[in-house]
Length: 96
Image 1 (cartoon, one colour):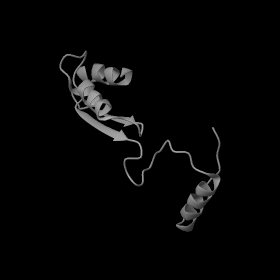
Image 2 (cartoon, one colour):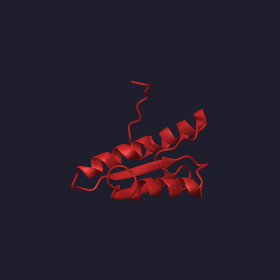
Image 3 (cartoon, rainbow, N blue to C red):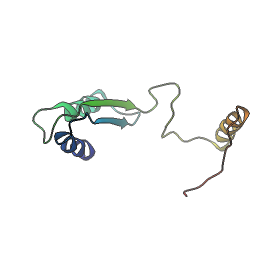
Image 4 (cartoon, helix red, strand yellow):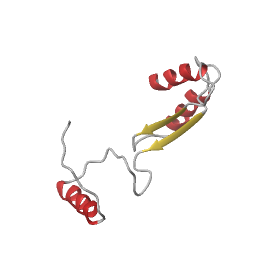
């Protein structure tokens, strides 16, 4: 909610449209999605309505780029091998 309100404040002073992606957990309900849109579009909130909004619920697609899901070491190893097989260099990294 705080981030959405900040976006609305910026939108009020910006001619170009500001878009927002709301990433919701898998457990999100219809009410959560409704609340995200109402925050973005409502006329009775501070600032201007957000001109572009995307709502994404985790694991709502069979495959996705970003996830909060935990993977086993074997699943990670298999993914790395698949990337290497198609020509990507996989570099081991930490929290750098």
